[in-house]
Length: 131
Length: 378
Image (cartoon, rainbow over all chains, first blue to last red; front, top):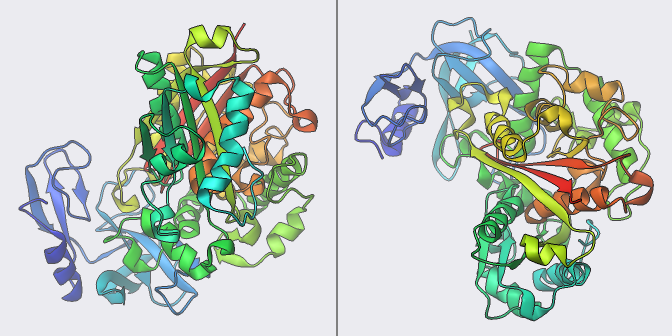
């Protein structure tokens, strides 16, 4: 794991209401920690505080859930973080997968970090809400 | 290969029902087989059954040969196939048994929510699973983005289910061959929007096997089919870190490698078996392997261009959608279908003039794809 960011630090940040990622000289910023840049292989990665607002890149609502999750009918999203229109197929900003409260956001809608989900053996996931 | 469906027998017994007939079909004896390349994805979790390669080798009379197991989610057994072909090509072995087996139905004693949890183990453990995502959910998100960018519709997705069920209806080994209608698909219950129950492949039990031989052996056998191209590529996990998730870039890269090896273009292929774990996955696959222009995978299906009797059929077997999807058996089952189509022995689901076939076997969120090109040997 990269010295710059490991899972435990990323997860603790999610519990504190922050999102951490890694920025690479190749131009990519990634929303999950790695030991080297997944795009170019560089190990020269910088830990960055990611924006907590963004737009919905894609979403779905899960009606048949894994046994770990007792409720069903929750919405899962991939959010493109930062000041973006979300219109480009090839997104440039960091993206993260998370939940959205309610069931009413669509692709291109603005969302902001609102908390976390922690139903899977203590592993946190970011929770968003509509802006 | 076995019929895909529900099987109440051990993994070894089920595998033998595919492997022994494959050896008979190839005309090879136990003494001829140099090695065993095998795929199983979930046996350790679902049945507390690991180290399966030597166990299954023992069961089919191959104890003693080097045996190895591959695991790459749903791309498991074509990864075994790829390694077997390369080993034969490079002279390491002359004759290799390749195959896969899996049991995913409630015959395992595991219910749908628990099997859904087991399947999602192929998604990122730390950055995806805690959201409550499922595999239908992963492909639902890729498909929804495709709908947003290109205007692919739920009706077009339903047309793919109808087509593959109609193809499966002509395949006696299919789990769910039947005539279905677009209305039935659109009226089935939501699983992960836009996918409804009938957009999703079933949980299946089954096994498949092929025998890979070098050209000298092949010349002494009837009805061999040549492997002329193999491509294998991976993409970034998790989905959110992929540059363009809907592109299924690993499939594009694997197809380019396979076509280059075979010395063909996508346009030269006559038919394909693609990894339609969900209807939307067939849209993405048909574009990634060059059977439809980007954005037109759904249109092509709705217009009947990918049906049996259309321009270039996709999934004449019924695909994962109708034939079924016993995870680790799916890849080599595609190779079986290509082989039998090119031999011209599949009866009423025969693709006319099937000379060049393409198999697209995808694992996880398209983190792995293996593309194979098979052609008739003159």
